[in-house]
Image (cartoon, rainbow over all chains, first blue to last red; front, side, top):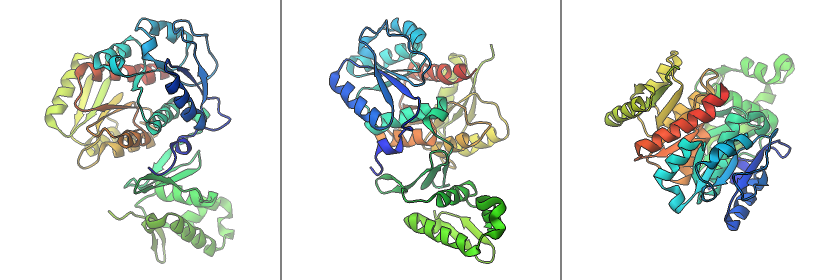
Length: 246
Length: 130
């Protein structure tokens, strides 16, 4: 699948995001720590006496807890000591529907499979981060093209295009090209005149900008979008419109 | 305490009715929509809903697009969204999270799992924010 999940779902290196991990299986613990650390999470091991974890306050992040080490009755104590979403994980007997339902009703915030794939785990944690700790995670509103072939995150200053094998990051976009892309996505399927585009991108300096400059940025953006660049339509004598072919 | 209202976007009528019954039994009110476009029109017109259960595959507007629209709307973006889907591949789950879903529930599902997931979502996102 295109685009390494650790890049796509990376949190800022200097973020305050922590993640507590309680895992019995050392292989799983090593594997998940590798995935999570590579995506920027600071992983803190919890001791395997689950009912007495050290109080950890003042930091943000979820707790990933091995359901094999917990009873439902442990969850209320965990909740007092960990100010975090409690995400339990398990497999086999720990992951029957009845068991999962009981854990969720007893206070777990979530239950995932111990055999979850890296990209799904990271996508899920980024979904948590977006909702609960957007500043720390450095995530912003994601704009999508109408047919979901292009998306861009204004805060993380990242954009992706859909490729055969998934999402491909657009690593070579300049800052201006990203802003232009975000403008097109925000106003997808609506004509924009040149004056409007210039004003949105350059503000008060718009009147001083050579019109050819905008042409060059658009041509460069089209090229970097590959086949998806055809969605940027020129409206001769007026401006541009972002319109994907169905 | 006011009952939470759950918006249900599901194109299969039988399943819509089953979901309404499950939600009623679990203490939720519901508003039923036969596809994403109807659900979006309801929300954009100020129709109240605290949470959403959204099917992925629907005509007119699918569940992923509905998620994206909800997440892009300043008034709606905090709404917890649970996706129902027959698609179980990891890349489908990833796509759902990317679109803004908070939870996935594969079909077919049992009532107790749906209710447990919904309660966990409510606790995690609605009670925490209030």
